[in-house]
Amino acid sequence: MPVTMLMYHMITHPKNANEVRLCRTPDAFRKDMEQIRQAGYQVLSFATVLDGVAGRVKLPDKAVAITFDDGIACAYENALPILQEFGYPASVFVVSSRVGGYNDFGEGFGLPRRRMLTSNEVRELAESGIDIGSHTANHLWLGKTDKAVVFQELLESKMVLEDMLGREVPHFAYPFGSWSTQARDTVIETGYKGACSTLSGRNRKDTDPYLLRRSEIKGSDAPWQFGLKLNFATNDMPPLSDVRHIVRQLIKKW
Ligand SMILES: [Zn+2]
Image 1 (spheres, rainbow, N blue to C red):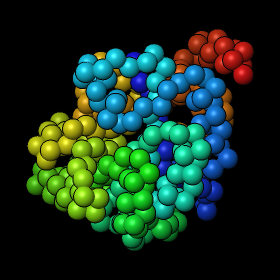
Image 2 (image 1 turned 120 degrees about the vertical axis):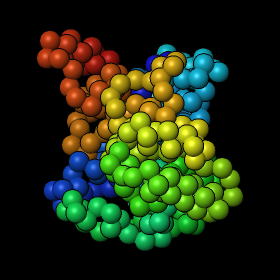
Image 3 (image 1 turned 90 degrees about the vertical axis):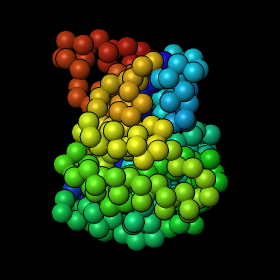
């Protein structure tokens, strides 16, 4: 402890300017994984992070977890081989109603059409040791949605994915990082064991397991920016007074 959780969306080349933030190229992603190894971090599964925040196990001082939101096909095509190269665990949060379809929930944001994971690919990821979690059925803003619909989104996605995999799906990630006290309570009611938000910061003993913190890795992040996020788990840059000191330390490490 503390554990930094990284959030990725796609591991591929962007098709247009709107996608730049969401697409980390395979080369940049491999460099991220190398930096994790070189900095001496241990990569933990989501389940191990939950054990750590609950105080069931003591986690290493330098720990990180890797997550992917949405369930775009590049999680299977591009991310999995690189994760396997390094032997790292990861979680993929899948929008259950779009499995085998397209990312049409992103159209309003000027995002190009992308193929989503098929059910076979979801199963193959799970068989390769990747943790499959839910990202709702339809990628809704849960913080702005009526409780009955939130309940339905959480339960339906859990059941569909559990049927697909033949095993429990205990983990969840809020689409758009959108949550409310009511949405969080409904995540618990529908039987999940943990959920991640997009709140900044590292996860420690007693961090709320239903609002785990994550740092977004953007397509445009340079290696030094990735290094800052890995070490400080921030989505915003730290105060300018700290930056010079931090960068000097990182450069020394490289
Ligand atoms: Zn999403």
